[in-house]
Image (tube, rainbow, N blue to C red; front, side, top):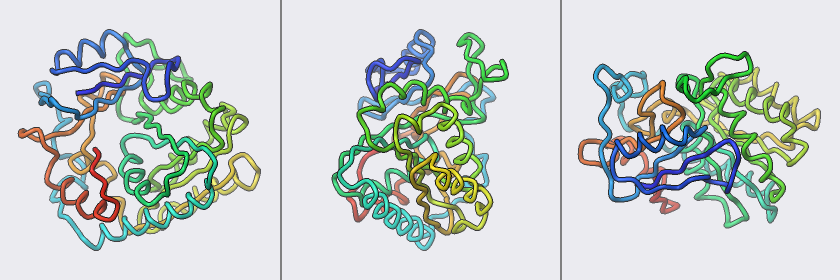
Length: 296
């Protein structure tokens, strides 16, 4: 499989070190050697299976979205239509200007995959920062948050933005796309972009799909709108769907973490046959039938 490692100082946009690996042990050794701020392991053949540590719950069905999951065509249709509407609005705003899409793994990844199939072939690059509030860096990484404590992946948004900042001059827009449940995370990430003066380097477009058609995010959406009204970000575009079923559903997402205390390292989430789980196959078949999407 192909491993992308991001270090604190960027060499290139997507990765600073890229390695082909063939085993879990090789993956672990490379992660331990480079201590990246984040990494993504892409499921490019030859594939291999990850084995969890004894007692680990990382591969179990824990979240309510994972338990008793059933494919729902009506819910899928709502998700698809929201993606299509958002794509058209993004296309109208970006037009022929060069843009970098900033879509955090894991929640925003399926949204961007769905949205991008309806966007015309514009000058768009993408970047998948790896962030998560429940995953922590090992002590040996010496990555501390602003309070001087061992950092979680919540802090990785800042590390990823700092890494990208020197590369932003080549773009007209930074399109931060994400899921919107309460809207608190999007508002917080935008606040950090502003604190890091990202908005002084590039025009920021915030875009997202909101759970339960936006019923739970009204207050935080007003915060985000205030960033637009004050001129700190350029636009805020959102569309609602019935349910963001991809939220916290690793069997549907196809991505997860090997361990919650070993850093921000995404791996493909495969079954014993080295295939994606059935719920992902069914969801992808519906969501991507119009765009012919066949990527991870």
